[in-house]
Length: 200
Image (cartoon, rainbow, N blue to C red; front, side, top):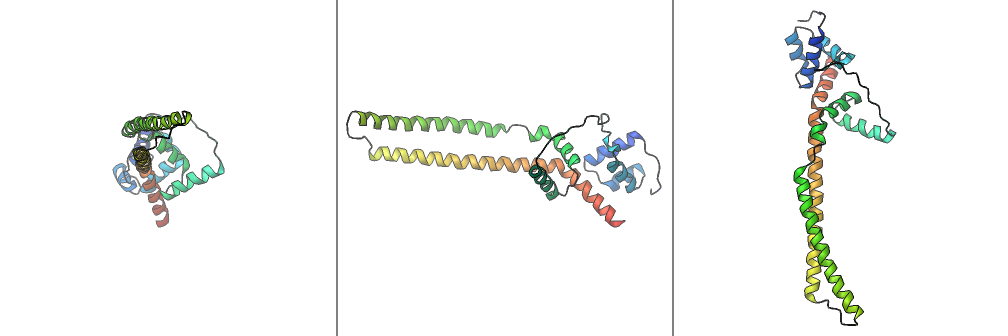
């Protein structure tokens, strides 16, 4: 199994596909009857650019600040990933999951928006009654019941604010899981490469 031979283009594409699915290098090398080093060479050289469909021919460029780049590199490093371009490719392939709107959150926010509108209407009615009494020179109709009403409205607003914060925290956790899932295969691949090179 350790002897070297020339891989076909189809086998190179197979290596890329299998690694993208998370198949270990040792399993791929055993299946193709080549050494693990041959598999690593395919993955690290640019021949991995041949995907399941065709060669990668499009090049994307973007400008970022030094701070943006440091933040991105730090986020990759926390996941054990060193290659930006590979990470960007994984995230692009997972874009459908990462960018899909959270329909549950959207529905909840719509409901909260309607409740806030009702709160606003109630507050406006209290304010209007107070303004009318002031303009007429009458005693302000701010009774203990009015005070209780305002207090209940304030409690409702603060409760809704807490719910919105928790929704956003949950959404962030979900996105973090999606990103981790998208980069998991790449992280395993880089960890295996480091282990392989360390053993040499």
